[in-house]
Length: 329
Figure 1: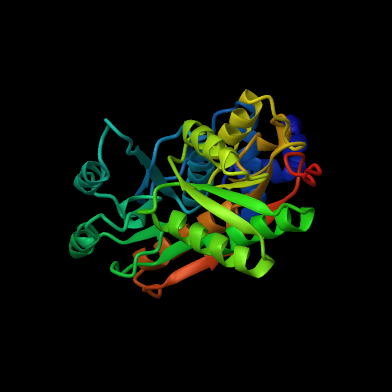
Figure 2: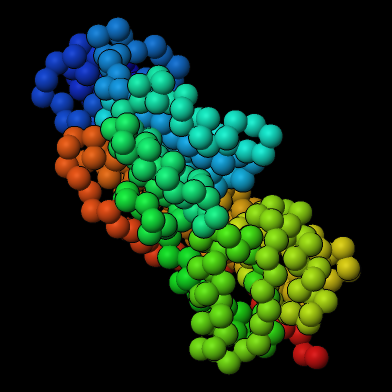
């Protein structure tokens, strides 16, 4: 009990009340004590083990991009706090499709589903699949990628603002030709970043070029090489992984980052601050967006319809070591 009290920064009496299931302990304090139990490796007493309020599906892309596990972790923590059991499904090329995952989740009687960067973000995909899900009485929330043809709550970062922030940063440093390496144009976030990029070029008076590629390190490498060939001294990327690919492309040509090329990422996923050089990036507000998605879904489950609209969250520029003034020509 002393160890648990020290870990949770509470008194032993408070630990005793929690372990014995007594009242008079604030919810937040109770959670701190339970977290201390978990961290220290103790099993929770049977009386403290919650019965699940239901299953919630979380459908996301592959887990190789660290931004997706980051979202999943926050969403799962939030759902668990409300007594729900999250069920994670990943769709990736060659694996289960989003439709297959949804069918499996519905068969298992999920109470609701959260979609992250799914087919709703692809303007070429048929939105009727979401109408069918609504017809089955399954509430759902869509994260990253607004689609006006789908009647549901959406949670998105401001992708246009993200691109504008990055371009202005490079323009303020003195870069006069800037490239954008971004994913396929059929995806809403990529389109919005391209729109914000074009608007920022006009606002700052600099020239620029857009290179559509894959949202991967390899995609960033290919786009980085193409943008270097077109005279860009600064590159804005659609993801941190793409930014690492652009850095690799520059170094493969014997160029220095940021001496010869400045690179800006997007997401601020975990460990990006520890790359070489530490990556300047536009931070996606993961925690705020994840909690908004959970709250919206819980309102829907509770019979309180949430507006069929898009809740937009503002990104933030994080300046590190991958951007600098361009060298004199």
